[in-house]
Image (cartoon, rainbow, N blue to C red; front, side, top):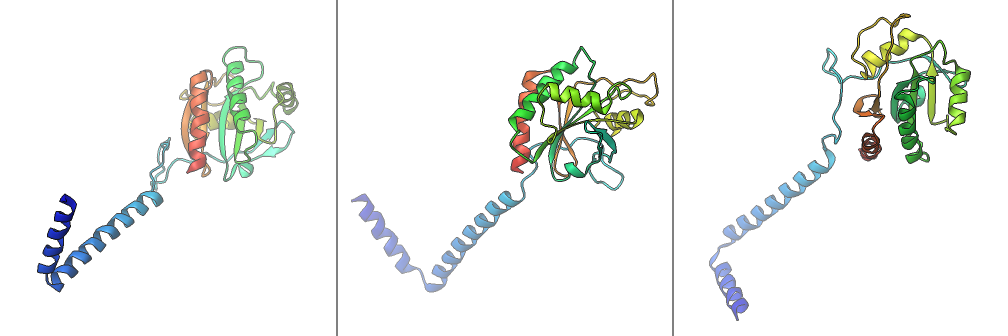
Length: 225
Protein backbone atom coordinates (compact mmCIF):
# COMPACT_ATOMS: atom_id res chain seq x y z
CA UNK A 1 0.00 0.00 0.00
CA UNK A 2 2.82 2.39 0.81
CA UNK A 3 4.54 1.64 -2.48
CA UNK A 4 1.35 2.26 -4.42
CA UNK A 5 0.75 5.54 -2.59
CA UNK A 6 4.27 6.73 -3.31
CA UNK A 7 3.95 5.71 -6.94
CA UNK A 8 0.71 7.69 -7.23
CA UNK A 9 2.26 10.77 -5.67
CA UNK A 10 5.21 10.58 -8.07
CA UNK A 11 2.88 10.24 -11.09
CA UNK A 12 0.83 13.22 -9.91
CA UNK A 13 4.00 15.25 -9.41
CA UNK A 14 5.28 14.43 -12.90
CA UNK A 15 1.94 15.50 -14.44
CA UNK A 16 2.31 18.93 -12.83
CA UNK A 17 5.72 19.47 -14.47
CA UNK A 18 5.88 21.09 -17.86
CA UNK A 19 8.09 19.75 -20.65
CA UNK A 20 10.85 22.28 -19.93
CA UNK A 21 11.11 21.20 -16.32
CA UNK A 22 11.17 17.53 -17.28
CA UNK A 23 13.87 18.20 -19.83
CA UNK A 24 15.95 20.03 -17.22
CA UNK A 25 15.71 17.06 -14.86
CA UNK A 26 16.74 14.61 -17.60
CA UNK A 27 19.70 16.77 -18.62
CA UNK A 28 20.78 17.02 -14.99
CA UNK A 29 20.72 13.25 -14.61
CA UNK A 30 22.79 12.82 -17.81
CA UNK A 31 25.38 15.36 -16.59
CA UNK A 32 25.76 13.62 -13.22
CA UNK A 33 26.21 10.22 -14.90
CA UNK A 34 28.74 11.66 -17.38
CA UNK A 35 30.79 13.29 -14.62
CA UNK A 36 30.86 10.01 -12.70
CA UNK A 37 32.00 8.11 -15.80
CA UNK A 38 34.82 10.57 -16.57
CA UNK A 39 35.99 10.64 -12.94
CA UNK A 40 36.04 6.85 -12.71
CA UNK A 41 38.04 6.47 -15.91
CA UNK A 42 40.44 9.21 -14.87
CA UNK A 43 41.25 7.23 -11.73
CA UNK A 44 41.88 4.14 -13.83
CA UNK A 45 44.19 5.81 -16.35
CA UNK A 46 46.06 8.28 -14.12
CA UNK A 47 47.16 6.21 -11.16
CA UNK A 48 49.86 7.57 -8.90
CA UNK A 49 52.82 5.17 -8.52
CA UNK A 50 52.35 2.71 -5.68
CA UNK A 51 56.07 2.77 -4.88
CA UNK A 52 57.92 6.10 -4.52
CA UNK A 53 60.87 7.23 -6.60
CA UNK A 54 64.22 7.53 -4.83
CA UNK A 55 67.19 9.74 -5.52
CA UNK A 56 67.79 13.45 -6.15
CA UNK A 57 66.12 15.10 -9.11
CA UNK A 58 68.36 16.23 -11.93
CA UNK A 59 68.73 19.92 -12.84
CA UNK A 60 65.96 19.74 -15.43
CA UNK A 61 63.50 18.33 -12.90
CA UNK A 62 63.74 14.77 -14.20
CA UNK A 63 63.92 11.88 -11.69
CA UNK A 64 67.18 10.17 -10.87
CA UNK A 65 68.15 7.35 -13.24
CA UNK A 66 70.76 4.64 -12.78
CA UNK A 67 73.95 5.53 -14.65
CA UNK A 68 75.31 3.63 -17.62
CA UNK A 69 78.04 1.08 -16.96
CA UNK A 70 80.45 -1.29 -18.70
CA UNK A 71 81.54 -4.25 -16.60
CA UNK A 72 82.60 -7.86 -17.17
CA UNK A 73 80.15 -10.54 -16.15
CA UNK A 74 80.82 -14.08 -14.94
CA UNK A 75 81.23 -15.26 -18.56
CA UNK A 76 83.86 -12.58 -19.32
CA UNK A 77 81.32 -10.78 -21.50
CA UNK A 78 81.26 -6.98 -21.38
CA UNK A 79 77.90 -6.08 -19.90
CA UNK A 80 76.07 -2.77 -20.12
CA UNK A 81 72.48 -1.68 -19.47
CA UNK A 82 71.10 -3.07 -22.72
CA UNK A 83 69.86 -6.41 -21.28
CA UNK A 84 68.16 -4.48 -18.45
CA UNK A 85 66.21 -2.01 -20.58
CA UNK A 86 62.50 -2.47 -20.02
CA UNK A 87 63.20 -4.92 -17.18
CA UNK A 88 62.66 -4.71 -13.44
CA UNK A 89 65.82 -5.67 -11.57
CA UNK A 90 67.43 -5.79 -8.15
CA UNK A 91 71.03 -4.63 -7.66
CA UNK A 92 73.44 -5.26 -4.81
CA UNK A 93 77.15 -4.99 -3.92
CA UNK A 94 79.01 -7.90 -2.33
CA UNK A 95 82.26 -9.91 -2.54
CA UNK A 96 82.78 -13.66 -2.69
CA UNK A 97 85.17 -14.00 0.27
CA UNK A 98 82.93 -12.04 2.65
CA UNK A 99 82.09 -14.01 5.80
CA UNK A 100 79.86 -11.37 7.39
CA UNK A 101 76.73 -9.97 5.74
CA UNK A 102 77.31 -11.25 2.20
CA UNK A 103 76.22 -14.88 2.74
CA UNK A 104 72.94 -13.62 4.21
CA UNK A 105 72.56 -11.21 1.28
CA UNK A 106 73.14 -14.01 -1.21
CA UNK A 107 70.53 -16.17 0.54
CA UNK A 108 68.07 -13.27 0.36
CA UNK A 109 68.78 -12.66 -3.32
CA UNK A 110 68.36 -16.37 -4.06
CA UNK A 111 64.85 -16.07 -2.59
CA UNK A 112 64.10 -13.26 -5.03
CA UNK A 113 65.67 -15.26 -7.85
CA UNK A 114 63.50 -18.30 -7.13
CA UNK A 115 60.32 -16.25 -6.67
CA UNK A 116 60.58 -14.88 -10.22
CA UNK A 117 62.63 -17.60 -11.88
CA UNK A 118 60.08 -18.06 -14.68
CA UNK A 119 59.39 -14.38 -15.25
CA UNK A 120 61.63 -12.94 -17.99
CA UNK A 121 60.85 -9.37 -16.89
CA UNK A 122 62.72 -9.76 -13.57
CA UNK A 123 66.54 -9.76 -13.40
CA UNK A 124 69.30 -9.40 -10.79
CA UNK A 125 72.65 -7.62 -10.95
CA UNK A 126 75.35 -8.24 -8.32
CA UNK A 127 78.50 -6.11 -8.30
CA UNK A 128 81.65 -7.27 -6.55
CA UNK A 129 83.36 -4.65 -4.40
CA UNK A 130 86.58 -6.69 -4.52
CA UNK A 131 87.33 -6.78 -8.25
CA UNK A 132 91.02 -7.61 -7.74
CA UNK A 133 90.07 -11.00 -6.31
CA UNK A 134 86.64 -11.56 -7.88
CA UNK A 135 87.57 -12.20 -11.49
CA UNK A 136 84.96 -13.50 -13.95
CA UNK A 137 86.04 -17.11 -13.31
CA UNK A 138 85.69 -16.64 -9.54
CA UNK A 139 82.21 -15.15 -10.01
CA UNK A 140 81.27 -17.98 -12.37
CA UNK A 141 82.28 -20.59 -9.79
CA UNK A 142 80.39 -18.68 -7.08
CA UNK A 143 77.21 -18.74 -9.20
CA UNK A 144 77.58 -22.38 -10.25
CA UNK A 145 78.07 -23.54 -6.66
CA UNK A 146 74.69 -21.99 -5.83
CA UNK A 147 72.92 -23.27 -8.96
CA UNK A 148 72.09 -19.73 -10.09
CA UNK A 149 70.63 -19.10 -13.54
CA UNK A 150 73.08 -16.52 -14.91
CA UNK A 151 70.74 -15.71 -17.80
CA UNK A 152 68.68 -13.82 -15.21
CA UNK A 153 71.32 -12.98 -12.61
CA UNK A 154 74.62 -11.42 -13.64
CA UNK A 155 77.67 -11.09 -11.40
CA UNK A 156 79.92 -8.27 -12.56
CA UNK A 157 83.47 -7.10 -11.96
CA UNK A 158 85.73 -4.49 -13.48
CA UNK A 159 87.18 -1.09 -12.69
CA UNK A 160 86.97 -0.52 -8.94
CA UNK A 161 86.29 3.21 -9.18
CA UNK A 162 83.44 2.65 -11.62
CA UNK A 163 81.85 0.06 -9.33
CA UNK A 164 82.23 2.26 -6.25
CA UNK A 165 80.82 5.29 -8.08
CA UNK A 166 77.85 3.18 -9.10
CA UNK A 167 77.24 2.19 -5.48
CA UNK A 168 77.53 5.75 -4.15
CA UNK A 169 76.16 8.01 -6.87
CA UNK A 170 74.04 5.82 -9.12
CA UNK A 171 72.30 3.20 -6.97
CA UNK A 172 72.77 5.35 -3.84
CA UNK A 173 73.20 2.32 -1.59
CA UNK A 174 76.27 3.66 0.24
CA UNK A 175 76.63 7.13 1.75
CA UNK A 176 80.35 6.93 2.53
CA UNK A 177 82.92 9.06 0.74
CA UNK A 178 85.86 7.66 -1.16
CA UNK A 179 87.87 7.73 -4.35
CA UNK A 180 87.73 4.07 -5.33
CA UNK A 181 91.45 3.78 -4.56
CA UNK A 182 93.38 0.92 -2.91
CA UNK A 183 92.34 1.96 0.61
CA UNK A 184 88.69 2.61 -0.23
CA UNK A 185 86.06 0.01 0.63
CA UNK A 186 82.28 -0.18 0.17
CA UNK A 187 80.34 -2.68 2.26
CA UNK A 188 76.54 -2.37 2.25
CA UNK A 189 73.61 -4.69 2.89
CA UNK A 190 71.23 -2.60 0.78
CA UNK A 191 69.36 -4.02 -2.20
CA UNK A 192 68.08 -1.48 -4.75
CA UNK A 193 64.89 -2.14 -6.72
CA UNK A 194 65.03 -0.57 -10.19
CA UNK A 195 61.99 -0.17 -12.45
CA UNK A 196 61.65 -0.60 -16.22
CA UNK A 197 62.73 3.01 -16.81
CA UNK A 198 65.91 2.71 -14.75
CA UNK A 199 64.56 4.56 -11.71
CA UNK A 200 65.13 3.38 -8.13
CA UNK A 201 61.83 2.44 -6.47
CA UNK A 202 62.91 0.91 -3.18
CA UNK A 203 65.71 -0.05 -0.78
CA UNK A 204 65.77 -3.22 1.30
CA UNK A 205 68.06 -4.76 3.90
CA UNK A 206 69.29 -7.90 2.15
CA UNK A 207 70.18 -9.55 5.48
CA UNK A 208 66.64 -9.24 6.85
CA UNK A 209 64.17 -11.97 5.87
CA UNK A 210 61.14 -9.70 6.37
CA UNK A 211 62.70 -6.98 4.19
CA UNK A 212 63.43 -9.50 1.46
CA UNK A 213 59.81 -10.64 1.65
CA UNK A 214 58.69 -7.04 1.20
CA UNK A 215 61.01 -6.71 -1.80
CA UNK A 216 59.40 -9.77 -3.41
CA UNK A 217 55.95 -8.27 -2.86
CA UNK A 218 57.01 -4.85 -4.16
CA UNK A 219 58.31 -6.40 -7.36
CA UNK A 220 54.80 -7.69 -7.99
CA UNK A 221 53.50 -4.12 -7.57
CA UNK A 222 55.92 -2.87 -10.23
CA UNK A 223 54.83 -5.66 -12.54
CA UNK A 224 51.25 -4.41 -12.22
CA UNK A 225 52.08 -0.77 -13.07
